[in-house]
Amino acid sequence: MLKHWPPLNALRGFEAAARLGSFHRAAEELHLSQSAISQQIRGLEDSLEQPLFFRQGRSVTLTDAGIDLLETTQSLLRQLASGIRRLDQYRKPNQLIVNTSPAFARHWLVPRLGDFRRQHPQADLWLLTSEEAPDMTAQTLDISIRDDLQAQAHCEHRVLLQDRLYPACHPSVLALPAAERSTLHGEREMDWSQWQVQGGADVGQQREGLNFSEPGQLLDAACQGLGIALVSELLAAPARAQGLLQPLDEAYVRGPRWSWLLHEDSARDPLVMRFCEWLLATLSFEK
Image 1 (spheres, rainbow, N blue to C red):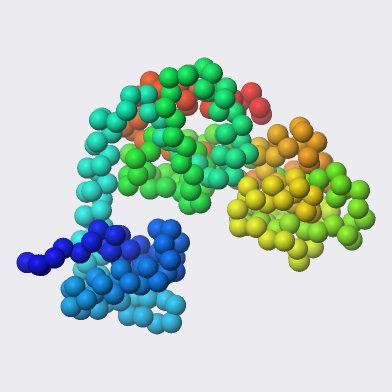
Image 2 (cartoon, helix red, strand yellow):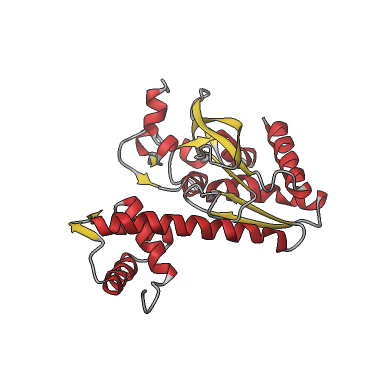
């Protein structure tokens, strides 16, 4: 038997690095530095007195011992997550935990939460944002609302809205000659390749410009007059209503699908049901 059990953080770091095949990506997922992940894994290897990874430049692969430990660690973390979720019954009454992306939170949900709060003042709502879709079995969440969700075990996956994209900019940019307009580039659907592939007209977009990894930052940059951007109709609606954005073309192309994951343990909770009803009604009203 081990004299000292490995720290849980070290096992989490090992599991992430093994699953992702990269210390760098594991560090990003766990919001740590790459050196912290490396130190955790070196400490784990020292305590076990054997290597767990073959290190090949920036990529890593598991040794036979690492493969064995990965199975054990993932089983342990799943059991721990399940046990933590069972503690939900002891949490504060009227607590509602919602996950979404930073862009959806900033540009759609938060501006409308006052309406939900007026209707349900007793709600103790926690809003947790993340760049990546959550693992609903490993995190204590009632519902996740995002444009990057796939079906998960023990959850209801429901498509809420098919978004559309269109090119837009601040009125001050629209007044400039097309050659003087900077182009703002995003990732995934917000990349201009989506507009071109789906038959969008040339609106003066260039390959060079400013690049944003987060859709909310892209939309903020467009509203501040930094250039032309391909924006989400859903997220850009408030800015367009305020006169901060004007379309460059009347055409639209298909955008992301917004959906929710509703955990089965939360599906019968009255407060969660009221939040779902409010969300559906608000989205339907704004279509």
